[in-house]
Image 1 (tube, rainbow, N blue to C red):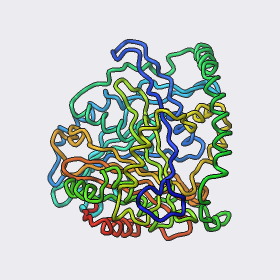
Image 2: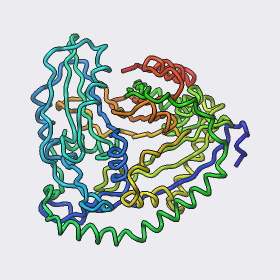
Image 3: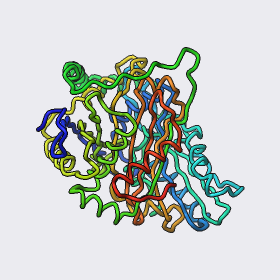
Image 4: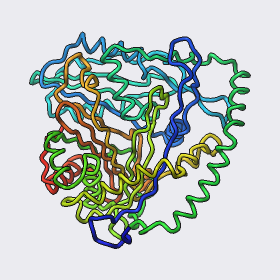
Length: 469
């Protein structure tokens, strides 16, 4: 393992890994009892949204070069109402209690835009959809809409809070709905427990969590000590906005499609894999946009799927954190690929300190959640091959499918406090790889056009060509 200042493509990476165990339902049949207590990660995301007013939204996007089948889309909407996305969160009556999943109390109507709009306005319409009011507690939890284009094509959007599902969970839910499969779990109705019963059961749950809470405290102490010796301090951020100048912002987004064969061939030519190519592209883009440490490294987080059969979590991931030297990723991916592979081998044997800390969320003062952030963190998440059925919201294959993420309600002061953001997500569907980037740098000019320019330049440096959404 080379030192943090070495400029080599072989192994200039430092990694910390973690894991999460998957909770299992007691029985996956209607009418039986299941453990509906939220996983700590799902509760943490929900509480973060309540504390900051920013409920992160995941958006599935379908693009058709022809008119869509409205009757097929209506059937898809009905299936979603009976599927695995048809649940919501019920808060514990105890301030320190664990929340629970309960059945949905209805959903929003299917929205079919009456007036066709030019294809060029699709991206702006998608951003409008992301700002539709969703409530993971009271509902509606998700919203499905379709926009006809003036040239005869059409676009479809589904938005849902991230605390309800991650990307892979969403794709699986969409595939089930397209196949007409109902949720195999009958979640209890909201407020089905009497208040005294709920308080007693949640107090018992907290008592059972006592050991995990203790481990969380110990993990927090260890992480604090370890962070003092972390390599390369972050470059200083620009001065925060003056008092009174804080305002809501739309974080720039860019989505591009690359041919799946071209993507895989380029990954192979550089000695990497699809995951390594995305990680390299993410690190290279971060370098272009100034998201590096004073040592010129990129703090890269790579989420990995931990979802198993019968998994009831909304977010089922573990993370690998690596320090990457982006100097030569455009010509050699072997170092990134080898280190990611080794991290995956090791992650089951090492304690997950972050996972342990999530057990503290119910007992922490909610104001502390507002201080969360990662000043140099960059995320690269590969969703792999999308289930084919998920590309068929109207019963036929869409020409393009992508996934995006939004932070509705975020402000300039929040972005400065969090140190900005760069999240790059990717997946493969219908012979295309989509790459979506959400990016904001405090103190810089932030725009969709600027992000598209940077992403286009990064793709060119990897000898890749793409078509933007």
